[in-house]
Image (cartoon, rainbow, N blue to C red; front, side, top):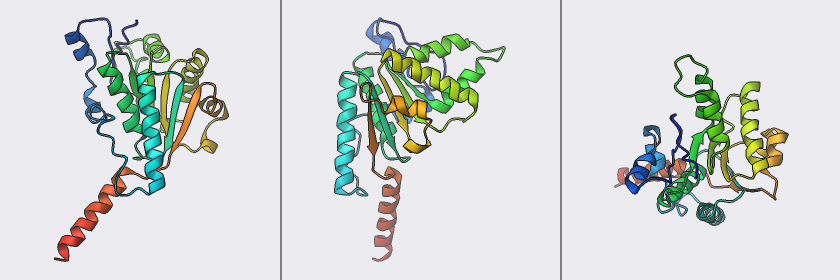
Amino acid sequence: MPSGKTDYGHVVPCLCTRNDADVDRAFTWASQFNKQKEMTFESFDWKRDNLSAEQRDNLDNAYHLAFEFAKSPEGWLVFRGDNGCGKTHLAAAIVNYRYKMKQPALFIVVSDFLDHLRSTFKPDSETSYDQLFESVKNAPLLILDDFGKHSSTPWAQEKLFQVINYRYNAKLPTVITTNLEEEDMDNSILSRFADPTVSTPFHVTAPSYFSGRHSLKRAQRGGQRGR
């Protein structure tokens, strides 16, 4: 099994062929992702106060989709929803689950991946363009977080399509999170995200987790003032 080790920031490097101590070190999240390290299935809150019954059911379904995918990654899982709805938590939970199973996974934020890809053209880059691009294209399990927040330059669109098209044709397990509406996606991308033979698209309808917390804090402050 390939090591999956990639020497750049927003990635979860995974090694499965060494002893437990080496594996533990290899699976350490990058410092920028300390929050994602805590995003597990156990810590996922689908019963929060700002949800309707329908939204709780929707989030529960998203949870079970992600959990089943984590146990046996096959095909694609595409989570679409508003910022803060829980889709990144579920994507990170998949990686953390695979980590516990000592299995390879790669978590990248799309905009950061493109930045790192551009940086390989610098003379002092320690990673070649081909090395970085191939490691993402061929990752045994790839999580593309925040698809749609990247630069819309032709170069960026081309690079992302190459990754997506390659993994689509190879049927490599892939998880994608996005806040784009379907009508805002390029048709060539949408056709792959929506292909039922490869992909399971799921619209997370829950509102932002943070809006619920803020509403609760405001209510608590109001109650305290009324005493």
